[in-house]
Length: 118
Length: 118
Length: 118
Length: 118
Image 1: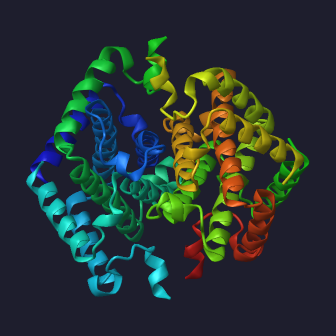
Image 2: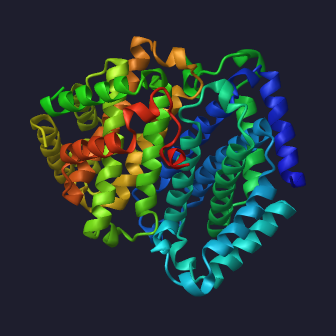
Image 3: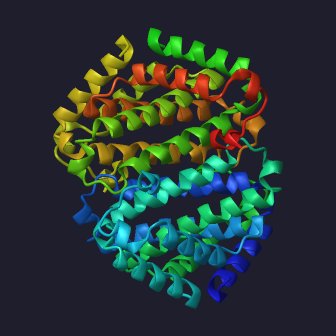
């Protein structure tokens, strides 16, 4: 992992330990918590137009930043529990996507992956 | 941001540009895509017991790593679109949570934040 | 419940029983499964404009109908496990919302509930 | 649709009309709102064991019932916008699942659908 994610991981480990919360942090529970935070992020955007979603007020942007932070924190916590290297996985996934979506084939087209198989 | 997230961000920007996909990457759409990936992560864990969720097979772990990678990648993409510093927001959120959940008050107790107000 | 939901509930109970799947249908697991299906629904809409989302092709509409069906089925299954009357709860919620969002106060305004407190 | 869902649909149409909220109720937005409510449902269950999730307190059960109601209401609202018959789609989906998961093949086994293809 990167230094920054490593530092966040260490802070989260200590945070959970001090509160005796490791017992709740099963991967299954952490996945649910991550998804719950994603729901909160959605709620900030659900009634906005695409244009409005790109021009948030400072107050709203701050709230959105904290929801995104919650997602990242659960992602880091989950990667620690499962012994997964997030950064390595992300680089792998970009490489996979580069093969799956060749630029010349999908330019300007955002259909779902499976739909290109036709 | 950290060096690793910066590098992923740069790769994602190039990826989107080569495919003329910036037009689809409104914050609203990226939030939906992030939530869609979270759904895929949930599906891997929905029928597992807590214990099973902590002892994934290598094959399953690889799949889970890639779903987590998708979430991270959309999180990075969204933070770029909204000009949000993910790492700074994550550190802020940990500081907020430390005040919100004092260790001596919540030890061993995982009720929801609001429920501590009682 | 309504007759139609009652009938679906009976079909689902039999379906689970014939497959010895009751053991997996804890409320926690069913909530995850419901959320996983919601993720699939999101994926159909994530790159569409608002206008495109209102004019789906017949094929896409069929797929969307089946994702919505999956959500309804898990909702029914969950209500059976928790002994909750979905229709009664829905009517209650509409009554609550009518008080929470007085027409004259929120007309043409879709900000989040909490934001009206200011 | 069933009478009960029809009645809820009529109440929701009137509710939206009185508040001039039809403008926000694009299928895309409704899907996001539905997913946001699913996130709230998840949050009620994320730290519970499977056993705890089956023995909710009356207060918690009431809260869960209202989150489930929100999901049902957005599902009905979305089906109206897209002209989809939810009950018919649900019956179709059960029939599809009966073929996809033959009882004798999947008894006591809850792996994901795709995994049975192997």
